[in-house]
Length: 400
Image (tube, rainbow, N blue to C red; front, side):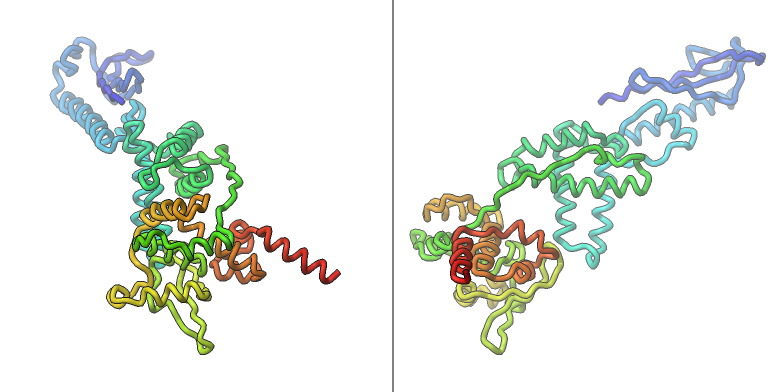
């Protein structure tokens, strides 16, 4: 936006005064603010064209200083890419203007602070805030802005940000965010704006009237038949696909998220006196310590990759990015003719549904293994399969 600034002195005669008073008219984009100066000048002593006194050199020095000072305020605001108004420049000159934070500026300061408080904030949480800020920057770039004043964030702006997320393909996956994922982005931004509201940088929480509803989703999981097909398929002998399949199956039988599985090290595995293997690790997402049993297929994969690479790195599983792994899973789904969209998180859903609850592991135990803090979260992941429901009918018939 163009910020055309015009500064003009003029004389104004008031009732009850012998001489006209000197004023400065500040104009930005045709909007004006008037600044009264403590000087009275006879009309014949004022040079309108030069905007100076014909006699008073000290006054002229002061008038030049005022113009330079206001122009300096404007330059600073332009440099900070902040909104400029005539009233704001007047307030700056009079010392009445409070610091007007931009959203990006305020958010960045918050991120810088929490990054230094690693004992209070997990790396995953810090990463979530960073990613959210980057998404906001990307959105502002579409409007040719680098920042927006906190006070200017309103219902309309939030709606535009929401629409941007739902139609703009992400760099990571090449598709727009889904409704529920976009809502998560709003959650991070909402927490920042509530903080700004509590610190009185804004007078109202913009999200007060902006309501969002989650879509009910059916979380994908594999049946036991599909798990068996996946484990037994040769995958054309492709070593990369086999490694990815093994990593996927490892989480099917441990319930680990990708971030926890990929960061799993030998130090996190312990074998009890009864010979059973357990994973004892702090979750990256929540920071909660979890103890998860390693079932037969997970143990097989654990031993399979006991190689030279593990001795060097200490990591249990081969190294790969989540994005690359999910790309390979798409190919695996095609080869095995599993008509489902496979991502690593489907393994966690399968663990909750097919591997544990369908085999009558109590919900409370599954919740503990998944590292959930409440049963309601576990119920979202876990489904009652038809096979399990049928087995319960058989049991009920037997008792009756």
